[in-house]
Image (cartoon, rainbow, N blue to C red; front, side, top):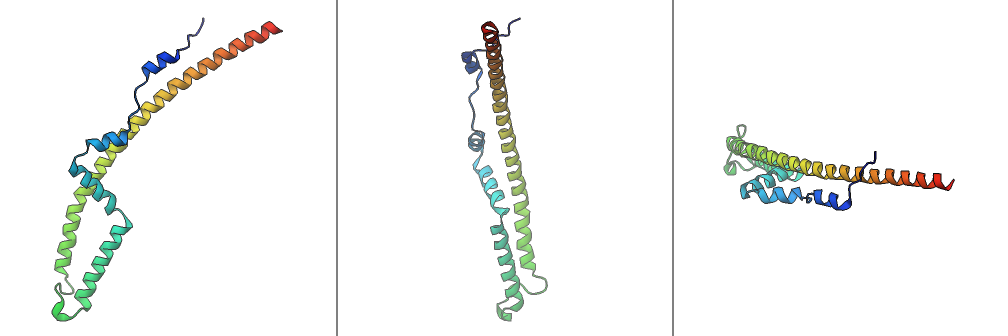
Length: 147
């Protein structure tokens, strides 16, 4: 029983074009999606933390230690600071969740692209192994004839 080895031309016909999933997903994003991703990417940085920390420290220090007539958010309540902080949190939370969902879709598309490439590589490796086995058999036949 002779095993038929696929030809290179047949393999090329089976090939699907490799798709840049990052580019494909990026093209499908709306401007609002891009804004959500931008915010999600930058809010989770030390730079953002430092900005919020400096803003909070300055606000609280000014309204605690500054001249009494220039304090605009009195100690100990800091009601205006709490209001602004809560508004920032309320607006950032859903935007970050949207950004994370979009990142999840991107990772899924990347995984699907990787799967396609891995299946192609597996098929091509099988063909290479079949060719090597065939060559090994032919070499064994040649060697046995020479002896």
